Length: 317
Image 1: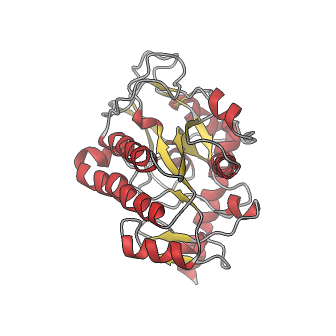
Image 2: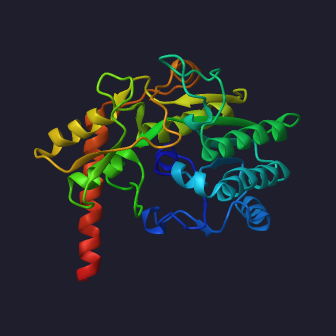
C-alpha cells in the first residue's frame, strides 16, 4: 500500500483483519473491513470508491496447514478469487493484479524456474493458487479487463523505513522465524532437512525483499494502465541462498550464536527453487534495490526489534 501511495495512487483497502493489522495502514487512507468472498461488500466498495484497478493479496499461505486443511485453501484462495474477479468484471474494473506463488511449479529440473516451467504444485496451497490463476484467465478471456499474475518466490524483509513488516504468531516464513530465534523471541530455529543434494545439504531458495516486491506491483500496474497485455511473471532475484546460509548470515548480523537445530524434511519442500527473472526485468520498468541477503535480514531484524519494543510498551502502558 505504501508503495502505491508513494507512487501517487489513491488507495482503498479491503481486509477482514483475520491476519492483517489496521494499525499498520496509513491513517488517512480508507479501510473497509470485510472479505473478498463477500460479493455484496466487494461490489459496494468498487462502486462507492469508483475503483478502476485491483490488487488481490488476500488468501491463506501456510504450506503445512494446507495439507491438514485443504478445504480452507481452496475456499480462501480459489473460490474467493473467483468471487472477487467476477465482481471486478461486473464493476468495469480495468486491471486485476493477483499475487500467486512459485508453489505452482513442479519440482524444478533446471537451475532456474521460468514462467513456462512445468506446473505441478506439490501442495494444496500451490494447487489452490494455480486454480485461481486459471479462473482469472477464463474470466478475462473475452473482456477488456486485463490481468497481471505475479508468482512470488520467497518474500522476506520489512519496510526499510519501519512503517510495515510481518506480524504473525507462530510464523512459518523462514527468515522471520530465524530472526525471531536469533533475538530470543522463540527458543530455536529448525532447519528442515540437511541431507539434500546441495553444497551444504540444505534447501536453496530465491529470497525477494518485500519492498522490491511492492515496487514490482506498482510497475505491473503502470504497465497494464499503459496498455500492456495480460501477463504472468516470476518475482525473485534469480539467485539462491541455502537455509544454512540464511542462518549463518543472521549470526553474522547479530554478532553472536543462537539455537539452530536440524529436523526431518517436510512434505512439499523442493530442494532448489530459484527464479528466472529475465521476463519481468524485460517487461516492466522494475529495478530491485534491496537484492542482498544481508539487507533482507537486517530489515527483518530491525522490524522484529521494533515490534518487540512496541509490544513491551503496550504491555507496560
